[in-house]
Image 1 (cartoon, protein in one colour):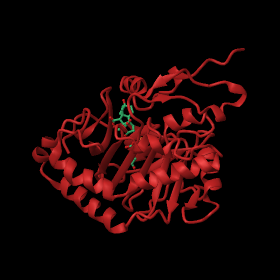
Image 2 (cartoon, rainbow, N blue to C red):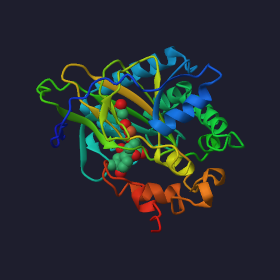
Image 3 (cartoon, rainbow, N blue to C red):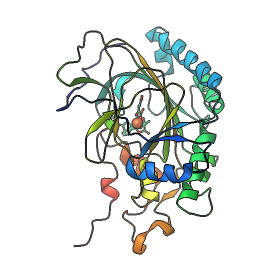
Length: 318
Ligand SMILES: C=C1C[C@]23C[C@@]1(O)CC[C@H]2[C@@]12CC[C@H](O)[C@@](C)(C(=O)O1)[C@H]2[C@@H]3C(=O)O
Ligand SMILES: O=C(O)CCC(=O)C(=O)O
Ligand SMILES: [Fe+2]
């Protein structure tokens, strides 16, 4: 990777330990919808097993990604810059955020100019079958919340105009960096995902951390056979704050590289993002009305760690 500027070194008061309490949900079990709702309320994050995505597809996609990131920089740069889609190195977003990461950002609706890469990864992403799984989870959540119709969330991802993104992140090992006294080199700085739902699969290298409601950071043990699900800002709004979009980050590893693949399921640009009427206690929305286009426009003016929903919150009357 070309060093452009120095990624942040994060000083945490406590060295994070692996947290045993992250909800593990077996999607084949009949009671999983209740557990899904609880996980979205308590953490905005959970791990799923028996997800139905063939492991061969995941492995195939992983080996394509390894091949891509092993290419000479001059070849990788042919797929860049990453605004809005393409190859990026260290710089994340347009507003000065940096991390110890290189990545490939792709649209899932094939309007990307990077056809060569879109065709390898775009098709693989479909085969990756994550969209189907994401929709199943969203339908189980609607059932768990007792909302009709059950495709109230999933139809947004199924829409032809769905503004979804597929991302491959590669965090090379950083051998010069000695982890000590709770200091971590940031691979991907803390943030929430703006979309409805994010589906993440990584290799067996650790690094992902989530923030609990009390603000403590916990490390998520990697599991290459499972998927990790994040509630995004849009789902927080649609549930009027009942589900929490999870703050998360990735810390770099001194000896092993981490490879992650994430599907960000988003709505069509014209979609109004607002609480579902049945979830508005006392009829009040916590948020001002906005479309996904307006939210994205505002998000792209923000820094990674910003609270992007803040400007759309209604100030509680005193
Ligand atoms: C700093 C930024 C990068 C980001 C767009 C943003 O302005 C704020 C949100 C960031 C994020 C986080 C989740 C996804 O990785 C991402 C693709 C997204 O939709 O929002 C990134 C954006 C990015 O890397 O371009
Ligand atoms: O790479 C990871 O494990 C997570 C990255 C992430 O949160 C993101 O790309 O939005
Ligand atoms: Fe994220």
